[in-house]
Structure formats: structure tokens, C-alpha cells
Length: 257
Image (cartoon, rainbow, N blue to C red; front, top):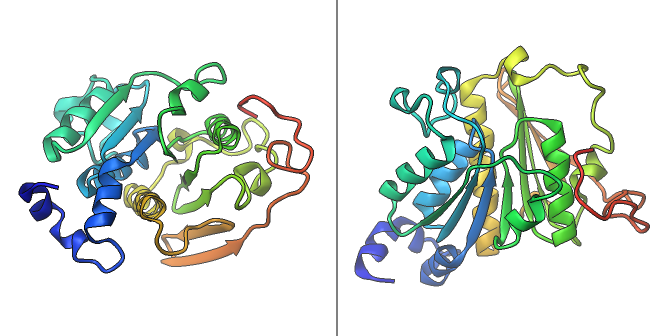
């Protein structure tokens, strides 16, 4: 590291679990954030400022006025612009150490394995069930750690999926809810600050995985209720009958459900 980097990351470097070697791990890390909305925005901001060396950003949407109460990386001047491109420009201005790669696209069963191939850790910032199952399947098949987060109205959840060491998303949620059973965020709403809390948990878990410190949320689901200001931890076992990570898998390519 050069003198400017030592000063920039000084508050991290002095931490006993990080030091200069830990900061070098961060600078060498490659993380992909899929979805740059309420969750992906704070994740990307904090990972970039922490010095994660290569940051991939995936999103196919453009900034809308209704995004701004929770998607903190954007401003009113960005309305109508591609989210991935706006985020890239702002993150590189915040920290020129970071190489930001934009992927203006929607992930699918046909492209997701190619998209995640060059990254060490995948962060799920998606806002729908098909994408969550798709990202989970791709990460399990590619043996890449995935950090999951989700928000709904006043509640949120987060966990870490590390293939070979704990349960995957399908172990915890074997089947998606029937279509229409759970309203979308657009229909049900979401507290903006809630997305920030869960996004920061995702960012923290990602940094822990890179650094190899602490106890990642592997086999543990954190559930947060913002109205009660309460956190609940649920231990979740690996499902030996899971169709993708179980003893006799039946899923051999990523799929939405």
C-alpha cells in the first residue's frame, strides 16, 4: 500500500483483526453486488469505501423518483439514468482505489454463471423470489459464498450461504410462495431505513468473509423487526434432501424456482 492508502484505511488497519495484511486482502477481493436498490446501494457504498478492490454491479433498471427514499446512492439528478452507470461513477469518485465494473443487465439462468465467474463473493440485493433462487443456485453450483438479505415493510432478514459449510437458500425456503401470496415492495411498501440496516449487515458479513474473521451468518438467519427494534436469530440446518445442495441433487443448472 502507498501512503495515501495507509491514511485512507487507517481506522481499519489499526483494528487487531485487520491490520495491513487484512487491508491487502480487501484490496485484492472481487465482490459482485446483484441489484442496486435499497439493499445493494448501502452494500456497494460501504464495500467501496472499505477498499474492496474490484466491485461488480449488476442492475438493468433506471433510477426512478420512488427509489430515492431508500436507494441512498442516487439523487434527484440521476432520475432516468442507468443505475449501474450512476453507481459506478459515484463509487469511483468516493474511492479511486476501487475498480468498478458495471453490468447493465438482468441475470437469468442463461447468463448468471458467466456473470459470477470472476468474483469471489456474491451479494444478493435482489427484491424478488425468482432472482433469489436463481442467485442461490448459481452460487451453490459455482461454489461461491453468497450473502443474502431481504426486506418487507418493517421487517428484514439476512444470512450467509457458503456451499459445503452450511445450508443454502433452498434449505431454508424450499418453495417460493404462490404467485400473489406476498405483495411486492411496490405494492406493500418498505421503510427506507430498514433497507439500510439489512444492507449494512450484508456489507459487514461480506467484509468478514473476505478477512476471514468473526463468525459469519452461516446456518443462522437473522430476523430484524424495526417496529419492535428487535433482532432474532434462528439456527437453520442443512437439508439433506435439498434439490441442489443435498445428498441427491436434482438441480444441475440455475433456475428461478
